[in-house]
Amino acid sequence: MAIDSLRRCIEAEVLPRVRDNWNRAFSSELAHELLQIVHPYGIGAGWLPEDGGGMGLSYMTSGLLYKELSRLAPDVAGMAYVSEGAAMKIYRHGTEEQKARFLPGFAKGRLLGCGAVTEPGTGSNVRQLRTRAVKEGAGWRLSGEKIFISNATVADVLTVLAKTGEKEFTIFLLDRSEHDFQSREIEKLGLNGWSFGSLVFQDLYVDDAFRLGGVGSALSEVMAGFERARVWVALIATGIAQAALENSVAYARERDQFGVPIASHQLVQRHLADMAAETEAANLLTLKALAKLDQGGRADMPSSLAKFYASEAAVRVASRAVQVHGAYGVTREFPVERHLRNARMLTIPDGTTEINQLIVGRELTGISAFLGAAGANKQAAS
Image (tube, rainbow, N blue to C red):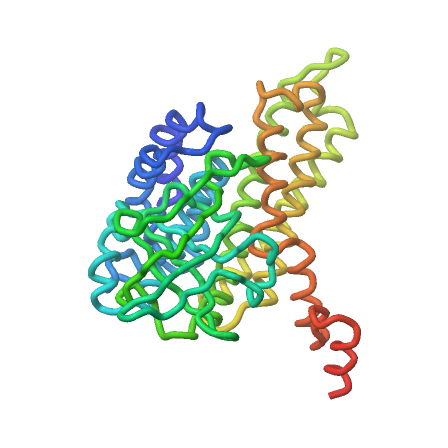
């Protein structure tokens, strides 16, 4: 019933507003309007426990809702889950004052958040980040640059990871209405409605009241956030694959060639069968990862499996969808070219396919390939 209600809302309220915005980033006004529309259905604050003002949904329930949203409007799903992740960081590690200031806005769908981790030149190596916060009086001086940040230009509240010591990482909260920083949108291949940009902090003073959690305590929270994010990327990928499959089945039934629907051609049916198998496999891996998140504890293996398989499967499914549609598949008259561009975007964030394969390999063998050959040999010998 919840999924059906959300579907009707998306079709009636969301799609009319975003159809003309698929190829440009949502404005801040539109982003907030869309969040307000889907918020009552458990999107954007569903993870927040009830004592934080949220719905206290399980990850499984929330994931099923997000998958349906991703089938129809993946840009909105991406924007909302990133915001929800920022809210959860505040709920888990915020002071009572920080919670009182920010959580009501997230819980009511009025605030959008983002998490700023990635930097130019560091990629997946979080420990090499260069953004620094230096203690100064009752606060900190924050300097650095972040790039490829979801919701960069629309977020009201930012959780920013910075170095506060040689091997010490701390999260700071920035309020766009109070802190002066630069944000810029980056044009990209797909998921263009979903804001994706860069942030620049130039000697920005941040009062210690905006420090989230203890000094040097951030790395474990960031890693846990990556696990959850990987599952949500898998959900979005699965939703896109499902949409590509549904579009292809409908087109194959309707398109006549040589006097018969192309659905009667054996090679077309083979395409559809392979698409269905990959979509279902991605779905099952993602459901397993959601179940693991609900159990608590680390979820490296299921989250990385779901992320790399579902995102790559979505690319293959969407590519087959273009093939089924023939020449129409490469035009913007049909949605499958957009599905392909959107799916291709998801193989990169929250750990590339290769990074997630290395995580799976490490979990299987107990040996980390991140260390290189010499490090791996030393680890195996020990």
